[in-house]
Image (cartoon, rainbow, N blue to C red; front, side, top):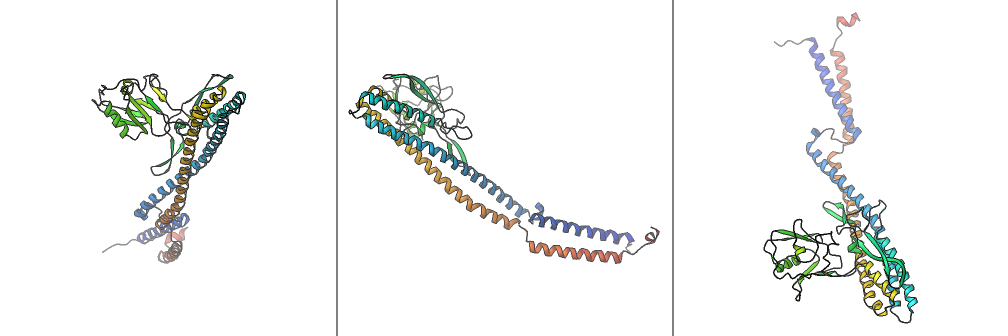
Length: 414
């Protein structure tokens, strides 16, 4: 026979009322947050899906912000490039005029003086910075001023003028992520924008009997080319030509020395691996210095930058050399302008890619938000109905408790 005390009904009633209060509180919280997932145990699978959706949405929004900022930076870079192109167009006009013998030597020196001023403006463009103070054309060395100017005297001109412009940046552009493992360039390598000719390097060291002594590697334009012990110069040439580096290697038939020629206009960056001397032994680089200032002084080097072409034209105008003005000098300006226009085309292509990316993100984010909504959003109408049901049940329970729990002697002793 089970014995039931007077407290058991009270305790049971309190327990049930407490459970109902908790249900009402939980439902109120869900309605306040407009989500049916008050805790992970409400629906673990939906919570897992929602976490993935929200993470993807956050990433896409970050990519959209990156793309928008880079697109704004591209507008600034494009303005500088267009300005440089207009300057080169004016320089070309002066070159065509200077190639005409109807102008006197004084006239040509005046043209040279104008070109000298335009050269200074081109250098300013090459050293341009974004609003955050980082250099546009220094590659990933964003805090470096890309071009260092060396002053000197030239024939036919009194006073100091720009004699040399040295690139101090890097060949690696800095990148900004606009998608999962998808990047665009933000800071550009000056050697890719302000270069004119294909560069050639001809060593003076006979490499006919040369062999690599141990496994090592060399770098050309940042591309790692691995060499094995016993490789001769022919194997080295073949491995270089099979690599992704934009350079073609060969052997000079007269000197039996190694030669390099870029396949597109840019400045070559060549270096040995640490503790290796392959390129040094071949007479291409020296032990002292870093690229691009480590090319061996004994090697024959050709090819110059946009600034070199402008300086050459200026100097020929100062000297009044009509033949060179209309020949090599004018050709150098044309090559410089062609390279700059190609860089502008590449910039435009990246800008178009950014626009496509932003349109895709604008479409994808609402779709993911809709999918997440299906997983976590609360059915408000059902929630209100459930809450009203719980309230009515709670009132009925309180009424029943009042009738079931009768007064005791203690109630009259208060």
